[in-house]
Length: 538
Image (cartoon, rainbow, N blue to C red):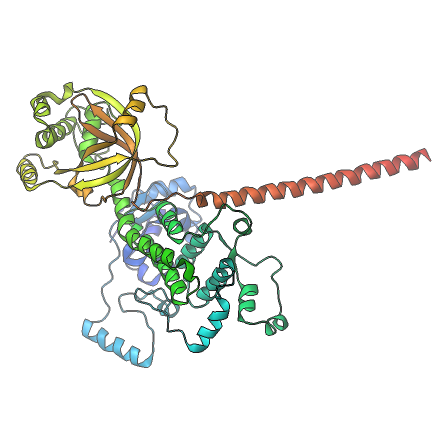
């Protein structure tokens, strides 16, 4: 990949960092982009490179990078290659096979020829490999674990011990460590030295395995969890909440699949350890359920990211554009919108999309009125929460109809149906619903939306949709805008507020401490003034 002569100097510097020439030997940047995954990198991190510090202000650097034909700027914050890195193997396949076999015999770990940025440390097993399994428990280890995980020991103590021993048996790279620590925090487990938990080697020598594990643990159940009745053990619930709310934040289709797989792998790996070592048999069914949540998340979370990026879809957008919806005014006449990279249809195209949809799926009465769609009126709108109950793809006759029409109107995409029912989103804003909306909420419990097949293929029963639904005077509903899409495993937990509560609590305690210091200082100052006045009077 080469840049054009129009790219400013700072852009040329960054292009070199991302070039085929530099990337194979740049371990730091390769780790950031995930090699061939081509993940976006924060522009601010690039600006911290020694040769980039002279280019200021930040806004000018961003504008310069936008002129690059090699790199793509995303949301003025991130940058990535327009074409993912592809590195050809540095040796023929037959030579690679011989070398790899020799390395296995000698017990040598070397980077693959097509991944020269991998270090020896990165090549070592981590315990997070796809088919990794803990070794069978030896009789001696079994006896030790009997004392560590005895049923008479509280669950809180056993889980602390298990986390401590689990971490000692895994090799955590930066990204896996971040996921694990966030997962622990979300579940009420803190990390760091325990209060009053210090000990020296002489103390440890006099302790058994259970006592050593207790005093050396750096992950422990939070005091806020231990001493309140607001928390309960729920492995499956925490898995659903962490994956459907916490992990989903900020995911994109360009890199989301790898992030999702990393999260579910770390969680599943931990659950397997708990089961293998019989840490908490009373919660075995919960842990098994949590593993199934991870299996579902592997499939659904990425699909949700795609659906969130594609909805409302061409048909719903076309109705919105022609009938006073959110994007009304974006299209005008036969001229395309000024940002042709985002929207490349005219207002007439939108009308054709609506007409053809009614021809394919409308009732006889609706079809009779399809001649002039501009006369339709929007008669209803509502901010709504929906749950998908059925995904209905187009039948062969409908696909054939669209295929034939696409020869003259290539922008037409076959529609299917998304059957939904009302659903209550726990964090939905308090909207001022109209009298009509309140009435419909009591009697209209289901609805059907028309959606393109290339979006429906990523939808699943149980998926949640937050958005605005509107209705034309001929009885056709459309999805005008989307606020959020959630997977079927969605579960909101108060754990989302746990970290924020701890920050507020820490700030409150610090303020109280400062107030006490100030009061003490003020009292001492008053005593000094009193002493001085007594001396002067004497």
